[in-house]
Image 1 (spheres, rainbow, N blue to C red):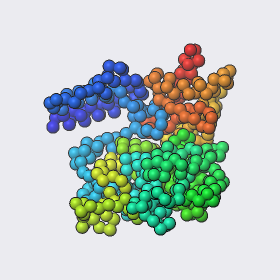
Image 2 (cartoon, one colour):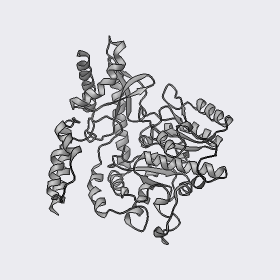
Image 3 (spheres, one colour):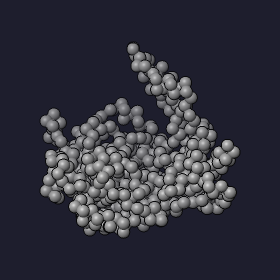
Image 4 (cartoon, rainbow, N blue to C red):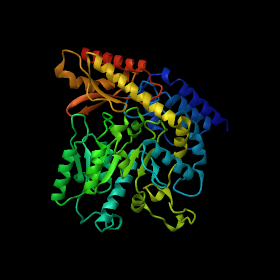
Length: 468
């Protein structure tokens, strides 16, 4: 098919010119109307026409995360190896629910590699790839819920939650929203989610955690799950994992670690002490499509004891019986997805291309650049660093002299102003009551010069805002 060659050329041309384009630009009204308002064609269109539409109407308006001056959220540039094999995964188009084919077997290796990279004990069947950490969190929380019910003498799958004590789970004030969503989705409800305050470094306050668990037990609730962060999305902070693991063991709670973004930070020089305790987790969520740059979607759920996940999800109707499945069964028995895409191929390609040394180099380079940005902020008279840099996220604010009453308004407005200018992409957040800026360094192509431009763009955006 000639069109496949044209598509490959489009991809190559786009990637070769990413850093020469604006990081991001708004979609003009006419193009937005075309993109969102198309009618389904009555008769089929030629493949060449579709590629022309992609070139003219879609490639000019990326999210921006492929650019070396994209510092927003936790969205990486795509790994070249992952891009290279994506068409092959689509061409094979397997369902990786189970069966004897390359997609399933390759996932076994990829999951094991991920566990080995972050130092998480792994045995065959101890994890699976998901669409992202949000689905991984649902999967882990469901396994924990079933284990807790079993321990109390009932089965949540057959009995439901009605008539049983209120399950309670514990997250920090800096926890990702996917934990609350998972609790709501699984019938625990926000009423069962306890938000634990953080200390001055934005880490979970373990004394407050102990107090909350004791209060819930006294009130007749059923504490069953605590989630710690190995790199929060706001500040990159790592909770005191070892202490939280001890508390979970003491109270019989499932210990979950959200390492979606930051688990790989354990590979940075001198970072290991901050991650001690992660290996004790009953479950660990991480996202290869974040720091590793695996093209989305690709998350992972890792389990210390995979039988708990299987107990929560296994359902094998007659038409899916597989006498050759072996002891582990199918992947669809360990999570909510039945038809599962070939996520392992782009993850395998990315990891194989980098090798362990390349992954360590990527983590080391980006964390060092984040540290350099923090130093530049500390040395500048018009910026203020808000938290120590632990991984590759820097939380800070613009603080020029003379406008103390307008700092929050100014910092809230800066990210959008920087984005519109097109030379860099920055996002904001709120730490306590303080409006903050946050820069996430993930792209291996980002340099110190790009970081300098980011600070210049913040100053320029602030000047424009203050002039109005």
